[in-house]
Amino acid sequence: MPEIILDDIFFAYDKDNNVIQNINLKLDGPGLICIIGPNGVGKSTLIKCINKLLSPNSGDVYLDGINVKNIRTKALAKDMAYVPVSSQDCFAMSVVDSILIGRHNHQRWRTTDRDLEMVYKVMNLLDIEDLSMRSFNELSAGQHQKVSLARGLVQESKILILDEPTSNLDVRHQVYVAELLRAIAIRMEMTIIMISHDLNISAKYAHKIIVMSSPGIIHSIGTPNEVITETMIREVYGVECTIIIDGKMPHVILGSAIPTEK
Image 1 (cartoon, helix red, strand yellow):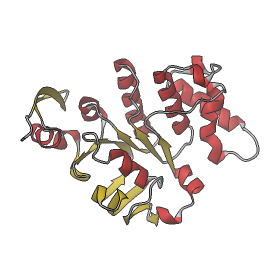
Image 2 (cartoon, helix red, strand yellow):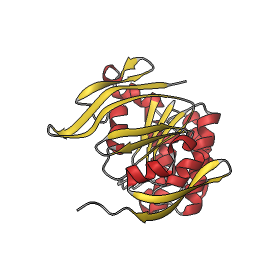
Image 3 (cartoon, rainbow, N blue to C red):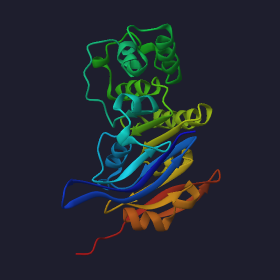
């Protein structure tokens, strides 16, 4: 099973403003890990430091004991797939061909039967076979999101990192994708790391939750029952709420926002 260790990570886009600071984590699978927290606390920056899209100003990230600084980008992509928050791509190609892009790190000179097998297997999982011959740039925002997710899954990586994979999806498909990711993490023994703004989807489907808060620090880590509390939501989000237990998992009923001091 893959193991990710973050050792005292700091990152700033300018030297006087740390976006994330003093991040120490050990992530090992299999399982679905949700990163939650308000806007602007560094959730996307954190995952980009994990997958080497950004280089920390200090500290190190290790994958299975190897510093990612010493792993070539293409080699790292075989172990760690990434799906951004939303795709701005505009591909004048079919959905099948756009998903095949995710097989780039496995391909040599041509597309193989194995490549196509993985593409159709993932399309079946996401229930998008009917889109196979559609042009990618004609799809809706929600369809774009599912095709982008498919492109990440076909990489067959040990680790899948997703920035808000349920954005642009209606409620039914948000639940479907969350259920699917949890099942895939266990069945395929993967570590799936997902940023989410939906507290109840995170509480219901995550095996572990990382709560980030201002100023770019980790507030708490644990199971949904350990971290989804009225106290945490008050401290991190500034909102009063009531927590009920639904099927042994916490469910958040939001109250009113706590007035800020003037």
